[in-house]
Amino acid sequence: MQQDLCTADPALARRAAALGADGDPDALILQSWARCAAAGLQAGAAVQVPVVDGAELARRRERAGGVRRLALAQMEALVPQIAGSNFLLAFADADGVILDLRTDSRFRMDDGDGIVAGSRWQEADAGTNGLGTALASGQAVAVTGGEHFFERLGRISCTAAPVHDVDGSLAGVLDASSYVAARQRHTLALVRIAAVQMENALLRQRMRGRWVVALATRPEFLGTANEGLLAFDEAGRLLAANARAAQLLHGATAPGAAGEALLGERWEALAARWRQDGAAPLRAHGGTTLHAAAVARPPQPRLAPRSVAPAVAAAPGVVADDPAVADAFRLVEAAVRMKAPILIQGETGCGKELLARHAHVASGRRGHFVAVNCGALPEGLLEAELFGHVGGAYTGARRDGSVGLVASADGGTLLLDEIGELPLSQQAALLRFLDDGLVRPVGGTASRRVDVQLLAATHVPLAEAVAARRFRADLLYRLDTVRVELPPLRRREDFAAAVRSVLATLDGASRIDDEAVARLARHDWPGNFRELRSLLTRALLRRGGGRLALADVEPLLPPLAPAAGSALQQEASERVRRVFERSGNVSRTARELGISRTTVYRHLRAPQAR
Image 1 (cartoon, rainbow, N blue to C red):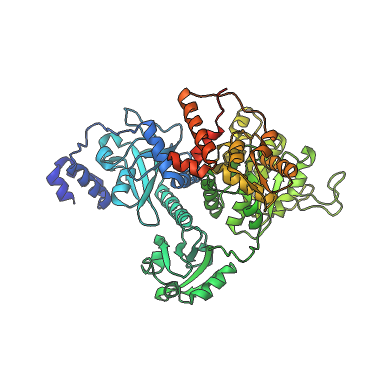
Image 2: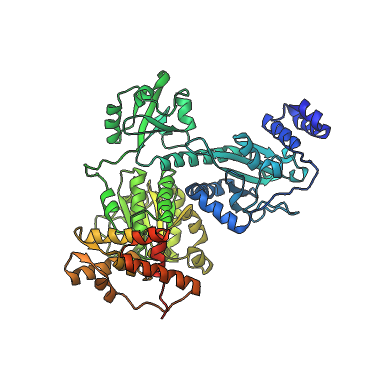
């Protein structure tokens, strides 16, 4: 390879020889240099990294969808692990365009060659670099200092790992960069692990409703980045496998392979065992003893689930046809598998507790789901309520003491609801628990370790509360590992389905006309699902059950606001209303106008000109 470089560019060959002074230079770097030289790049030239415009960046972010959200979660988890190294974290799509960045304020690039959102770091533009070379090679790579093709990037160290989808296609690249002097040698390993976690989460997402089985050489490796994952259909035919599973099964993971041949037992026996949540050793393909457990399974429609899932599935607002809501569900499912703290934000009544209950079910934890309303606890007794107390610890304390709400969630899930209402004076005690996982009851001397999946929920902008000194910044950093935002009801694309879901919980035999749903969609719903449930309850009581029509809901809503928006917008909305009034059906209106049902609802919701 060095001889090829010498032929193409003697100066490059001398640089390669210098890199290899202490041993053979990395083959990935030399191969990248050869590609750059063949593309006509000049090592001493200025770095010209193209940047897409804002509209194109927005389109790429939207197209990345759930993959991008998984990347953001991994970037948040990486921040504390590489803090102090003047770092930059980036996620780029399959074209090398950076979609998102997290950066230490001390890391900056000058001379117009900045790493910014929208910049494209393919080798053809930026030479040998972490993102571009990981894309070109399909492998994780570290590019340090003089290993960059362009000499002007020599002060930077960057490590990157590609993220592959279940079909093997490239979904994106994770990158961690720093100045050479501040680089940490373990960063490449951290980035590799983060990419594997993303790939595993992608497999689980793509295979929802299928059997997903985790494999490991030891039971304690299950649930870690070292586990293999296999996805099967209900007949036991292999649909997908991650790279670790292919290693454990000696490459015998071609799609369509029989589960019995891979795992050494009758598929029916395996499925029956996994239905009971059992993880047990088995003799897999190649004679290897592996431990296997089902981390996802197809639903059993004729059997009642044995967990809190029925309350979640039937509760208002858990319709997840809205893309943002569906992404929120997928993100919490991935986060609980990493045991990462989750912060759920959204307006009052938008379904935060329901999402938290879904996270508890997805975690597979056998302990209780405990929800604590931080705003409802009396300030003077808050610590005792959370962490318990020994008998007689204070005036009015129970004689036999109390274990406290936190310990009640041991082995399960703890939701700190309305965390923004937690008094500042009590936040230090909560921070201590988050730091060490130890609970000491008020008046006691002994501590006990508690294992909980932590979630916090709030409608308060916590960053603003920190700025106003009402909330501790260090507590926010601990809670805000994975952030999920639920949209308000008025912005949900599945508004009609949400209305019908709430109605079904009130009266399964009742129905509601499309015209009534369209009128409901034009209300702002400041109380979100709580307000919707209350209004539908009143409408049913007035009607006496049956089918709700426009006349049943109109008197319960405030008058419509005056028209707003441009004349063109008003004209488009009026056209949709005319077609809807003629057809009487949202689906027919959408088909006739060639638009989506969501767009129909949006126009019907728009204020009318007076």
